[in-house]
Amino acid sequence: MPREPEPSWRDGLRSVRRDEFESLDALLSAVFRPGLVQQYPHLYSPENTGNMRVVVQDGKVVSHIGTIRRYASLLGCTVRAATLGGVSTYPEYRGKGYATALFEDWMRVCREDGVDFMLVSGYRKMYHRHGCRYVGKDFNFDVLKGDADRFDDAGVEMREANLEDAEAVAEVYRREPVRWLRPPVDYRNAMTSYVMNRPAQFLTIHERGTLQGYGIVQLLRKEDKERKVQLLEFAGDRRCIAGALGKVVKRYDLEALRVHVGGYDRPMQGMMADRGLKGAPANASGTVTLIHFTQFMERMRPYFAERLGEVAARNLVFLEQGDQMIFLHGGDRVVAEDRGEAAQLIFGTLEGTEEALLKAGGRAGEALRQIFPIPALWYGINYV
Image 1 (tube, rainbow, N blue to C red):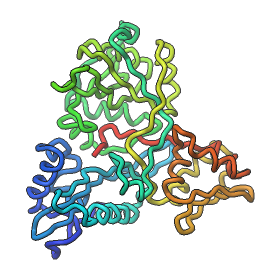
Image 2 (image 1 turned 135 degrees about the vertical axis):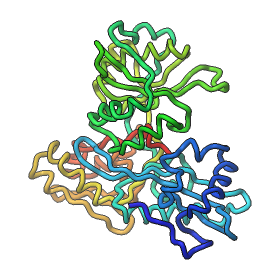
Image 3 (image 1 turned 90 degrees about the vertical axis):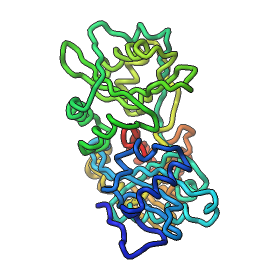
Image 4 (image 1 turned 30 degrees about the vertical axis):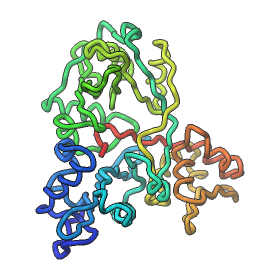
């Protein structure tokens, strides 16, 4: 559970206090942009102070990192994940190690809270040192203006959604095989604020009067001269979603609509291919680092049994020895030298970085090849 700030501390590294919220807002406005706090109410609210860690000097918030933590479902297994963002320090306070101290403190807090892995919205040397890597074997498809008619099915209707549609949208999302386990407030916040750092519109997709899916589209800004935006999230019947993409292109007069499709999502990949598009290989959201390797693997064991069989899955052993993360099976082993290499092995990479480990792992490598990569989560409305 989120921890309350330590009221006896005035300065130092700790959770932000309610009476410091204005000071935090000033920092985020200066480093990023004014209004950021209002654009991410799922993180930045006085009731959520336990999810905002700060460094305070002379009563002033000078450095900050925030997280949200949610359970997630990966192919039927329940895991716990965190998203981290809002990393900010005033220029005059940089070089003192504040951001590193905050990052390490968050890794400790997340581990105590049972988090398995963390998504980080960016890439820095600091993140790399703590195991953050680009992972995932996904695809990006670009629906161009000239493609719109092939993605505009006559029997499919698209409507702009509002707060009254939040529960219906949530019900559609709950059927996804790879998803966040979201409280209702996540949808209400997203419908009234930003999604993945952009203003956005929820669109519901219907066929013969029945809700079949939804999508969240970036809204064009004045600076978007090329009129290219992204579908930030979608869920539901893939045929109906594909049949609505051309309607999105036409409604917003777009030159291109980018659609990110998970590597596990063969139905959507097939729908896009059937309509003449080829996907470009893409990473999943942000970068990923492991927080609790052995716990994560144990939570995924039911899926491993589904792929390998009960006996083989029981014979998988996971160990942490120093920085190394070790997979044992059939008398052989695969050894990841650090959490970054382990994340690449578990979630896969576009470059195939994990192949050398698998080839050298004997029977352990053969078993891991059958269960990995595990699908990486896509941020959607859980971005910070």
